[in-house]
Image 1 (cartoon, rainbow over the protein chains, first blue to last red):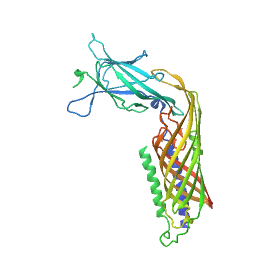
Image 2 (cartoon, rainbow over the protein chains, first blue to last red):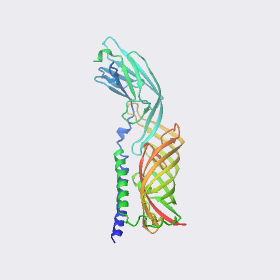
Image 3 (cartoon, helix red, strand yellow):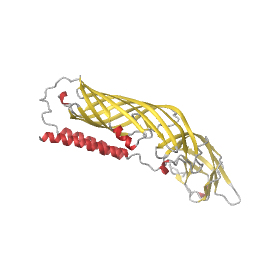
Image 4 (cartoon, rainbow over the protein chains, first blue to last red):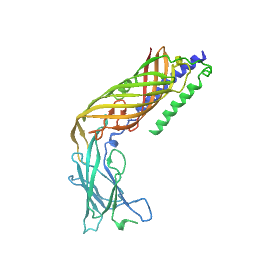
Length: 175
Length: 226
């Protein structure tokens, strides 16, 4: 009788655990559409100190940034910018961004960055629908202020990864 | 995700040890080993039916066949098919596919008497293959900066090879009628190079965006003696 009861309890425990694990795993896919639908290129500004291995983040004041072919300005004379988000055009295979660097009023100092990529439509979820992911194929830029541009990742997905490290030659801003 | 995985593995292992500890003391060296009694056990994944209430767009049916080929070692074949259909205002997506898995399970309880193999705590390994065709007749991409645009994806195929590790239980509820559950984690080996789109759901594997998905499945089985 005792063994029979133990066996019954075991079977019930199996069923209860089954429901429990089912509920847990079914909750994994909950997501907010606004968060997962944003797929920009992230680019941080850095400078390299001589006695340090790792680059140091750099904040830039009076930064203006816009995309060629779009009248909207992404960053308009913005201060304390250490990272920018660059939205790629999902109807073309490349997007160009123009950076207007801080300079005295009588000067305009610009750099242009071209990013070429492969577009990958992706069904995020049945509720959120499709977004476009990108695989960067190649990029190039002018070198007025940009000293070095390092690519950290070529896969642009709905994550918070930083894809580029930019080293502008703004000697006065470095401490 | 990793915390959840640890909890599930811990629960599974704890239950396994608990079940083993409750076994009567006569399951020892005094038991006479009998020859294997051949059987085939056929199972159906009932969790796939329940899953349709959570995500009705994805329909997958899975069947399993297993048999004890050596004491406490069970050869397992699994297979099934999948259908995804979603027709929304902002997109339409269709996919059809099938999958197969083959592998072995080992019974941790280790009864000496094969006739008593009615309660099993199993650890297993599988090789899996999945193939699917997918298409999106239209979809709308919303981009706050560049505006929204409509596009489509032509029909294309995708295949995936993977290895999976599993652990679970099977217990006989009535004569020859079993109930069981399995937790599985999968490791991708290779897949289609440069697919037009990562599949939303991969037959027999799970959601495509998870690199090592953990999946819980619940089965009912019937054992046929040979």
